[in-house]
Length: 558
Image (cartoon, rainbow, N blue to C red):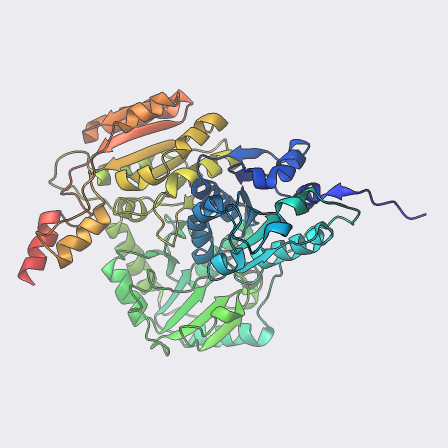
């Protein structure tokens, strides 16, 4: 006789689907609208991390998705809860990160009446995520969960939202559980690999740029071997710096915000640009100026797992619909020419990167961030994870730290403030044995500093470096360029951030001179607790290469 399928609640079916798909952790802010799921999680081996704000929970789930390569999972309640989580969804969409957000919903009999906290999530999130749906029957949960995992991970990965009516989650049904979903890998054809080889044999100034998502450790290693066999200069796209070892002699730098002018010139003058995984969107393209639209001057080879991205902005000479994993698996079939004419250019590109990433002393007061980054670069292990949100402070991290391998950088290509602390919590929970440092400006930190409480509750010993210049620095810099001497709405009056760490039971210190940083860092690292270093920098030190007065003076002269 066939096995009898037991009757289970919708909440239990949701959790069974998570278990079947190898979900390792759930992030949430609890709500009465999905109590049946919380009840099912009580009996599950999946750990639950309770965040302090839905935006922080969603960013933690997004960061987990980046690290794991499979959907980060977040649960929030309806209305305000879902609204708060939107910031994390936007990061996941622009960063091509697999993620599933489950939103509690009003009961089915109350819909279309603007019931308490009711929102139509299809309309609300329709332009922010890859797919949004509402599950009307508990019996269809396996179907919807199967599709959600598939959509979130395949093609160009991204976020999915599933709304869960409260009464549907309590409904019982006898239905088979869903099996594990497998992302669909796409590979280049033999004709395409042959075309790529011909283009490489014709090139004199090629450049390889790696970006996007769906990278395995094996694919990253394969791309390094490919670069070595062809002696190619290699750039990484904005905030994808873990895709290539910065100490490798072929590394050319980050194609991102505040790009090295020498690297920008190299991108413009490349006769063959091979873009793998990334989209070359506004920030890495320097405001769409490095490549002409729609027809680039460079011979462009664009490799992407999402077919809709090929030709969407730039018309490639050779479009390859392949994931980074699938593309990298076929590269051994591409052979270098007998003589490589661009080796001197590769050495020059690496020298330009090394010169650019070597911190120079700045004649300003307070803590000198270039020296801080040099100190960290000399002391951190290869597997240390650095996170950050958005702000001018991040320029020091991206320019001066030398990332050595996969899963060492968590930063939003969407430019979302407040990302660094939630991302660090997720990273430390996934890799408790690794050093995790969150960088945050004083404005960026205060958008999600409550998630330091999550770190304390979880025993996640992250180290937060708060770079305090008492302003929203990025916006202040823009004001000085466009409206010099007419500064408004960018000043910040800040608390004692080190005292906040101690209030949560963590380690907190204030650093006011460059010389104080290393001893404070070592004490924080040795404490074994979540820690905050409140680093005070001179407001004049607005970027690694300019002061406020220099920006203002240039603007007034212009």
